[in-house]
Image (cartoon, rainbow over all chains, first blue to last red; front, side):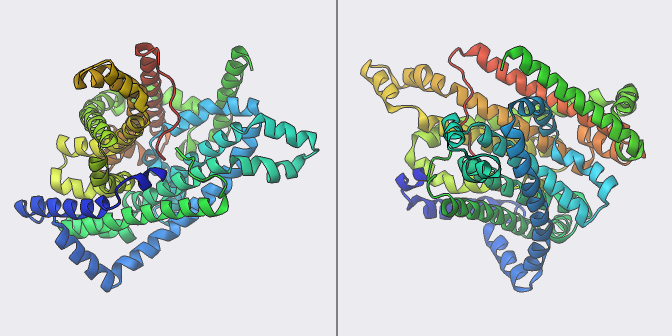
Length: 254
Length: 254
């Protein structure tokens, strides 16, 4: 985020306040059941946090999100590294990856119902499906973009086998791996709420559905806000981790 | 690697994929995972029973509305934010927030605000496309070299001339890249919205999904996959064709 340093940071708080005022002004002219003002949303947010319903729902939601995300990471990184190192295999799987990636993940929901039912396992499967490809594609790109000189130097120094991966391949590809992890966790949070809406409605998805059915748009906004903020926090957390783990790759992200 | 060898590898990859699918499908049976041959044989019936192509065409007409609106808004806002530090600062927090917001989480709320009809689907597709187009255009605008604009000014080109003859051509590859990513997200969002209220193509996926056999479901998924890949390739081809200076831009927002 080099660019943010050049930006007048004063503008951000002003932006948030102005935006909230505008939202409030628009919402006041509309029926509350259609479009709740931010004051009502913040009120609901406080009430839902105080009575414990929102934290409980978020805690429940995080479980399938984390399991699905970790499974995707554990499969995508090794597969990406092995496939990326082999030019022939990478060329052969590329069209299939592109094609599978073009299938809207939510269209897989009927499949997951058949295979995994309506509950935890199905939600984990959707989270996995929604972030697996994002991570895999980035890891593949990272491994394929490794500077040939680096690999030749390693070979001339007799670095082979596992040591080559540990000392050269993985560090060199790590900026891309981290991009995959960051984009992937954003998708995982996205999948977390999608799964709760499209399988049996539970946790945050259930709150969202119930409040919408009751025309309680303030509560619906509150849930959406929590999910978005959680997604933002996860991505920023990953950005921070990246900076701690690979400090040499500072600020060269796209 | 020669072009011929690369194509041979890709074809081999696809052939192996189809073969593995066929074997796995035969082991699990139509109810769990229909084999490739069953999907192909059953495809005419799928098209007939579910009016697959009619529904798909209808869905894409509605998608086009929301998508084009999203592209227009994204391009205009992206250029404005890229050129003005003030607008950038004022809009950035809200854009970042909207960018991470899960489309699925908006669905229940948008049903209240927009109903179940055209407006609802257009609004959902718009929300899915606009932020990607905006961010890519924004990054493009910021990467246009100041020398280019200064040269234009030195040659006494008017503001309009600078915009249409210098800035827009420089942005063109970015805009097309943004539109391509936006399209993928628009298609995903369309399926999310339609599966939730069971209409159009998403309705086909939902209804095919509750059948005993997965033949129709896989047929529908393959169809949307092919449409997605073809449209993406068309946009790529169009870019190369209409602008000789077009090249793939890798620096996309993550």
